[in-house]
Image (tube, rainbow, N blue to C red; front, side):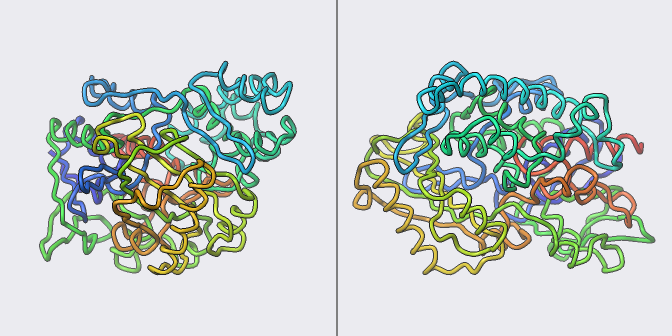
Length: 484
């Protein structure tokens, strides 16, 4: 039985661990932190539960397909509820509510801009076609060659790789609120809409077509489910085990070193930060220089606050977006001229609105997120300053006072992403999916310098996000299974 060592235990690592263990490999996972899950962990405090990392459950079909590959269903492990409304978007003079079906969403679009529902249905119909191609064809390829992108379907849509989401949206819709609403989903890909190929409109179908869901108990229920499945398949986990070195003998990977001990294996797969993983190798075996990493475009980092409120709050939903300031300006301050945002957009997640298990009775669990540029200075003073900005705006837009209801506040930012996840520049979502960072143009799944060394996760193929991470793990396992 061939041994495989997996570094890290995020979604991509758990995915590849399950596939390889199911194929008969002896798989051992080494995780730096106390619990498995990588960036998908939870904070428990005073009866409140917060998902520290991912909080949106989109593309339910990808999760279902993963568990189906092992003769399981998501319902074998966790309860999944579709949210209605999916989310609210707060603007300076209005609130847009995104319902759980196209009819409701079209009705809301018509309220904002007469005639827009017809354009929306055509746009989403095209987005659905792209989704089917992307999920069933493009993202299931390992990014080893540019020819992987050449299919009958993509050739017919080649223009969509050179036009942008912004271009496609703005030629159909004139109201700036609707434009922001339709450009928002591609932020999950980690790039400005004006830099994201229009083919990625499939994210709009993921949003409006497939809906927004919530696993009861939080997103960490998925991690628990995947760990349970992995253990059923024979995977062994070691937590509190940061890897100090990836061992190489004569150009072939031979194992890892952690805690001063050596563990040998025929294969090593790193689901940890790609840049950090290469620093664990002798210099001559690193594929990418520091200059290479420096020049890449990264998805944002985040300033996060986890807040316990001693009362139920008004005028909120499970997911809430605050777009009451200039969308374009904040994007420029993330990507074009990196700095702390002057007037930040932000997102707030209140899972306790739909899931009573997430907070004590008559209380609210609030997860506040401000997207920021990676690599910024991170100090307690800046965190405090931005918490005040966010809470003041939140209270104003929702018409209530919450400061006296705050029981506690915990924060997480650039320094924590670096310290806890070895994240390059403290990025939160990996490398952006721009045209020049798509498929074969991303860091490789397979090392070009060390035999039997592989990488997985959101800095490699297919890209950022939880569903792509599940796919990334499968792609790596397929490469190894093809070798043997």
